[in-house]
Figure 1: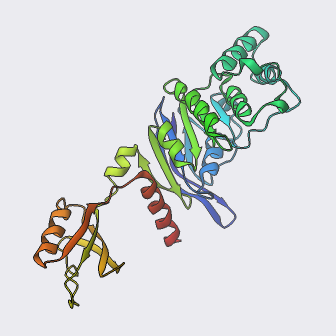
Figure 2: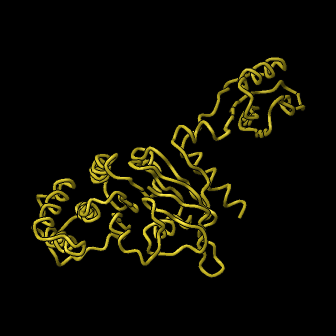
Length: 314
């Protein structure tokens, strides 16, 4: 459904997007993650045809995207982060107006409006003016407008931004029901929301695609092989018994309290018995151990490491 090939976008001397390539299959729910300034919104605007690429090409449903191709936009439903709505209109009046913009006749427009209202669960406010709606209902109206023409591609930019926990859960439920029927891109910087809703993640930093895959693929393929331990050396000992650990590529230690030392050891990717190696080494030197564990990698820690890595390079 979506294919990006070596896409760049510059604003003067600033490269907002750099050499980005990825593909999204039909029916997938994909999360686009990254901090502010990572290039997420720029990429979405290029996919929707609102912004041309500086280099590279983008295909949606097999057709190359260009700003003048209005027919291609009919295949895309877009809920922007700001969700601009005409507050003086009623919910059904606004959706009927949108249906006319998509060229629907009276009967077809009425059916489309009724279907969108039912799907987004806003029947109880359909006659109410938008200015009197809560933030959660306004998000639902925006989603209904994006779904009105039944597009094969749905793009949601920060769909739960500013919502309370109950509204977040309701919006998440609606999005989950769309899975399979629409190819969906969810743009966000709220990691737990994307992790719960999406079956694939694209992580951006500094305008570059830093990671691409399912949650499990990202965690198992990250090369994270770290162990944490706390130990106490013999009294009067000055030598560090862990200065040379077979298979370790990084070792850091610091004193914490009452002669205890806390150490972090990163092993090479092919080392599968790091904990056993450390335990044997500590026992050989007669050290007292009060903690020795493998650190469990989370999506949050992976995300932070990818973003910090990019910032450090910059």
